[in-house]
Each structure stands twice: as C-alpha cells, then as structure tokens.
Image 1 (tube, rainbow, N blue to C red):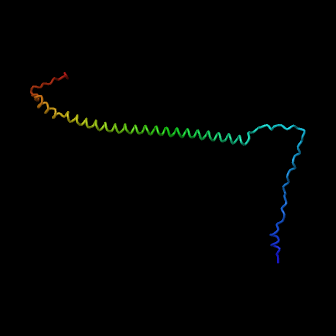
Image 2: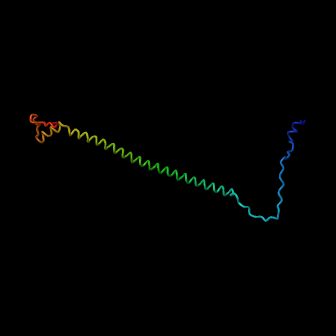
Image 3: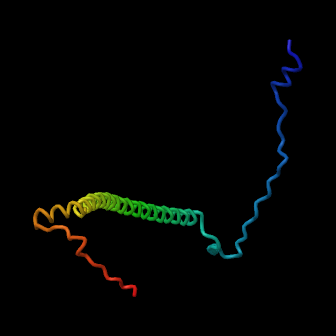
Length: 137
C-alpha cells in the first residue's frame, strides 16, 4: 500500500526557470575589425606591478632592518669600550686614594720633625729668641 506522502516525496515537481537569457547580438560584417584600444592595463600587468611593489617593499624593509642591526652592534661595541674605561677609571681612583693616604702620612708633622732631628741634626728654635713684627701699624 502506498501513501500519498511517499509519492509526493519520491517525485519532486519539475523546476521552471524564471530567468531568461538575452538573445545574442548579431555580428555585422560592415565594420572592419580593429584591435581594441587598451584603456586599462590587463590583469597580468596589474599583478606584475603589484609583485614588483611587494618586492620593493621587502627590499626596503630588509635594508632598514639591516641598518638597525648595524647601529645596535655599533652601540654594543661602544658600551663595551665604555665599560672598560669605567673599570680603568675606578682602578685609577683607588690608586690615587692610596697614594694620597701615603702622602698625608708622609707629610705628618711629628714624623717630619723626628726625621729632621735624626738625619739632619736639626733642633727646635728657642721660643725666647723668636720675635714677631706687627704689620698692622
């Protein structure tokens, strides 16, 4: 037994086209055929031009990145040289401080007096023989 549902599903209604195609234009033999004038570049020329511009941008970007790397390397070298100079300056400052300490201990008044007595036979001056001149008058 067949039902009305199975028949309706099994055979769909035929499709009708609502769109009509325009009739082709007839060719006339009266006009001589000439080459079409190119007002716009072809698609191939457009893609060639876009490829060239892309390659140009890649080259420009590569040159700029190379320049950045070169500058960074130069700065790194300068920083290394500056670090060496800073270490040398610190070493020289420590050396200067040690020499200043030696000089101040060598210039100490009691030490100089004792060396003068021992080596040169010098003695202290008698305070009663010392006179002062007053320049204020």
